[in-house]
Image 1 (cartoon, one colour):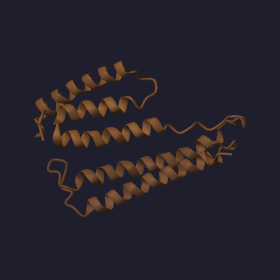
Image 2 (cartoon, helix red, strand yellow; image 1 turned 180 degrees about the vertical axis):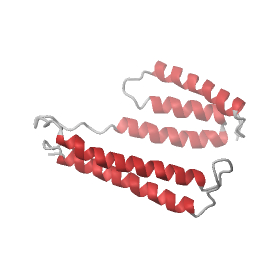
Image 3 (cartoon, one colour; image 1 turned 90 degrees about the vertical axis):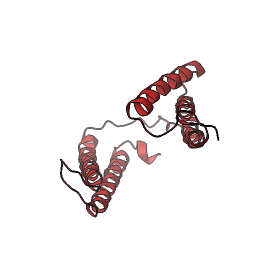
Image 4 (cartoon, rainbow, N blue to C red; image 1 turned 90 degrees about the horizontal axis):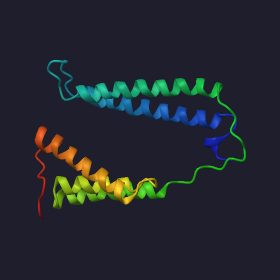
Amino acid sequence: MNTRTEGNGAGARRWEYYGGALMMLIGTGAIAQGASYGLGSLTAMGSGFFPVALGVVLTLLGVWIAATAHHAADGATEIAPQEEPVPREWRGWLCILASVAAFVVLGKYGGLLPATFAVVFISALGDRDNTLLSALVLAVAMSIVCVVVFWWALQVQFPLFTWG
């Protein structure tokens, strides 16, 4: 039987403890590393302020996840033994990885607009419920939002189009 779907809830509880502990570990690592930089104050933030703040949030979320894992397991219902585990979604994984690679390549050789269109379109194809038309509409809409927010409003130094 899959340890994530054990009937007594112990397997699920164990994975939630691991997830909470991992978040606490990453958070304390960010706090330790960020504290080595100048923290500054709220009005004049130093380079370590954001990593420390993020580390505190991650640590607190990790504590919350681990604490709620114990309470969730007490009221957990038993899973029927005839249920089969959900198959892995290889299509989604491959599309997400391909979209990141496409963004890197097109961002360097094509510019912001083609890279944004490609990352959204290819990622949207990872969802089995999306059609080519819905992925196309989503990619066009997100490309427009990206141009307005990053290129026009924030004036990020990333050319819209570049050749080579």
